Image 1 (cartoon, rainbow, N blue to C red):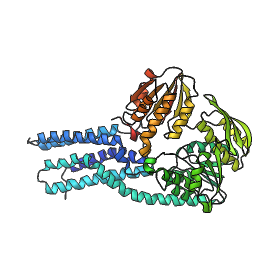
Image 2: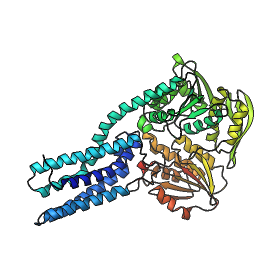
Image 3: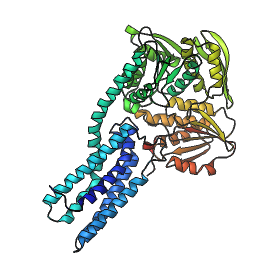
Length: 533
């Protein structure tokens, strides 16, 4: 097998093209911890692949026409060159600067990017060499280059699967190192927080309360995977008293793995619902997995949203059961919030600690924020933070970005709840919206990853919105149809506008929003769900 003079030019084109082709595929799998299956449900990738097929068909047609010319070798060179220029242009524009969650060029992403690029180029090189040996007409070899974009998805799956084996081995090394560092200091207090919703808010609230007395290290943003926790632990040293780890779960076994790494003595369970039912398969699996955060041992303490006491009692390991404190908005609990008054200026309520009430005020809005504050305050109190310090933290507490965050500007109030994508959170957001005495606008693409319950929950969301909203902006033609039907059946008398994408809706804001309106942004789906082609 040999390469002809000038073949390296084509191989270089393939290498450059493969580099840019890999990025959108890498972006798709990065959204779900590098699981290869993500590329099959990414609508944008399917659309780009169809464009590839059309481009190949067009250039192969041109190639066939020039086959009959004596100067076909020269023309074949030009056709292939322009083909790769078109491919490069398409994938260059497919770069992801405007994505809501852009491609993160982590060390793992860079390894995957270069390995798949080089392996794909090597595959084409071998195919080219085989073609030279078995195809007498050199002009026919160009079919290998035209076939590359069609075969690329398969190449990506194969080569990414290969490197994932080594990445898993590398991840286990990081996890063992993280586990060792967390166990080096026996006095370190470790707290795990999980739930179908509210975990990032409770984590941030608890951090502020505990920081009144302790030096606290907390996983940032939504760093709730094994690697996210490992990166945070790199900053851990002997000056820290407490480590708070947010734990996310999309599949059975995720919480179990994180608990094995962190081994916390304390935990908080914020709530359970059908979020990620699509990947968990059953609600029972979700409940069982979330309740694994309660496995902190007999000497441990768990703070649990009181609404889920029955679930906790069903799945709690009675052999090594920790002490469980139920807290929330339930009027019978020793730790609770009552006499709640919440409006657009903030919230006032009585926070009860062990049966004794204290007046509290916070700039946060909505009942769900109050519930999250109570869960955090209960854990802070149990860890020895004095009540005045807790109340002071509550008074100064700021909204977590994109989670019931009130933004005012240009005469319009915005309730940014774009990270909320679960039924309970959606209902709570609509309850908060009702507190505003003005024209109420809801913009949403609906709820996802609810499996067989998705259409039903979106229909219920439409029914609830019909009672609250004056104007509804729906993102996505097909997914939001159950919401539209729920609005109609609920007797909605306002306007409904449907857009293909979020950008289309934002471009139409000037025509739809008026000064004095309040806009609730309810869920802002990842780009893999974008229906716009």
